[in-house]
Length: 197
Image (cartoon, rainbow, N blue to C red):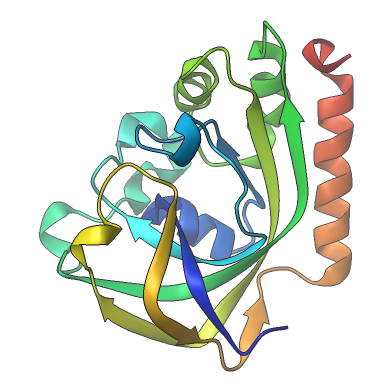
């Protein structure tokens, strides 16, 4: 395990909370508007999560999670960003099919997003594959807040930070056994989806 990290990955703050709590271990990606090479790539297998609030929408979350959205007046000062969750990619599953709706349905029990959000991810850039990324997540004992620099803005997934964030003591969101069991469940669900056969 490294002592520090200088790479961050942008994700909704509410999703980061679910990852930190062990409620989900996956993220879905096809890419942001301004990705390098015009499509998403897993450029790093270890990174910090960069929480985002701008595009969060209660209607794109399952009902049980809609109340977790931070009201606008309570959101952190946008001039700073706090890093409190570190992740390592354990599995990266690239799915390329003309019809991925079955895959989205199979993954439904394993994330906090409403079906409409997952389908939106599927239909974004329809010629590009869907990346299902499984993550082992760890909470940082002492979260670090840094200024948000202009180069951190924009619709990209990856951010190269100006300086390293020390990880210190980190706590896994799930035990080894719990994590492996969840990975097996997800792989089993994907294998049963007609679009992946």
